[in-house]
Image (tube, rainbow, N blue to C red):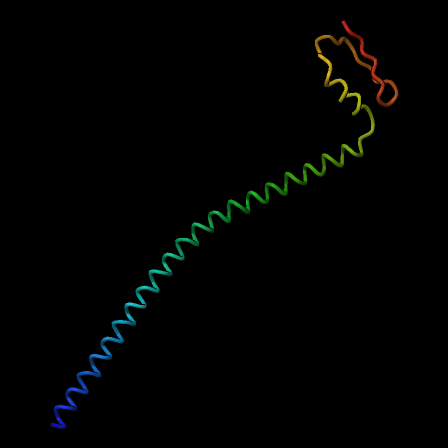
Length: 110
């Protein structure tokens, strides 16, 4: 009788160990699948991140150019106001233009 109890106990312990190993393998496979999915998403995100970084660099470069242009406009002396006035006039009617003073225009029409 004792021998049969020992055999049953040993068999149950082996079955329990086999079940534990099966669960561990299943969990490991699931973890590997999750890691593969996360790596695929990370690759996609890296591509998007590279695009965003390129856009940010381009935006910063353009902003520097805009700031430089605005600074140059503020520092500009001369006929800038006169040129703004000339933009409103049809160039086909003008024969010559002279800037007198800072913003005074003399326009000779045809």
